[in-house]
Image (cartoon, rainbow, N blue to C red; front, side, top):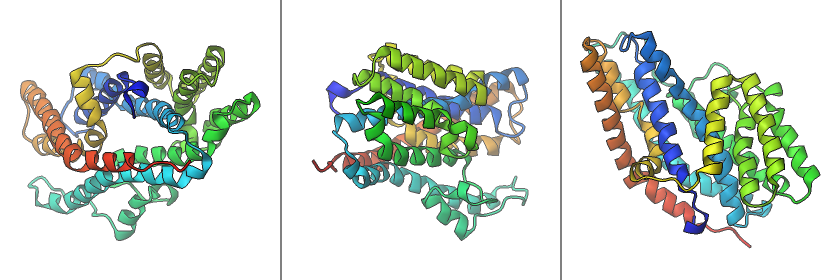
Length: 329
């Protein structure tokens, strides 16, 4: 994306979202590690980083499509670009995740209750198809959001021409489909989360001058109300925070935010395969609050270090390859 279409604050928001999810898992989901309910209640809000990612995707994908002059005949090229951009880090993380299911039996704390994935389960991960098969589970829980994101890419690729139309009735039709999603679909599929994505989309439409400020606000307020009703108030707040930050503080940036934002996808994928494993191993012996605090910091640093390597050698090359693929005019 050229500098003229770059939104600097997005990297800081990605960094915040990824670190929030990371700390949520480290503090709140490692069994027997942090016992203070006051601490876990604070860090439990970290899982709303997922909704922040949804708003960011809602904005940046159509933003990029608009500035690339996307047309419906580019749908398959668009899909290929997204796959080339995102699949390599995901597949590498999947390889590590599967390997860990076999290697964890070597741990002295292994209790024998874990089950290694089946060939079918692994195969379903390649098409993000796990939710479509009852009884199947993700090898790593964080993967569920990748399925939602991929469903969103397919949806926006098909509907972009309608939602970016200069005909208001076409846009309203798409708004209604998106806003009604939670009514007719459960949360492990895209429609339930469409109002959150719509916040980003409506913001994109306003910033590209396709819609007026009034239309954007009406759409977004309705979306926020629906988000609060079908999810909860914190989901609405974190989604709204991301929306208003992009709207009013788009030029904010920092060196740390840019660095962590760049590696945020790799950090999201690998934090449970690096720092989480360390904390799970140490949870059986660490008793001092100070030691636990230090271990969490070390876990975060290890995750950032590992994610930096994945970004450098896997994600960045795939990102560059994807950017070289151009749409046909």
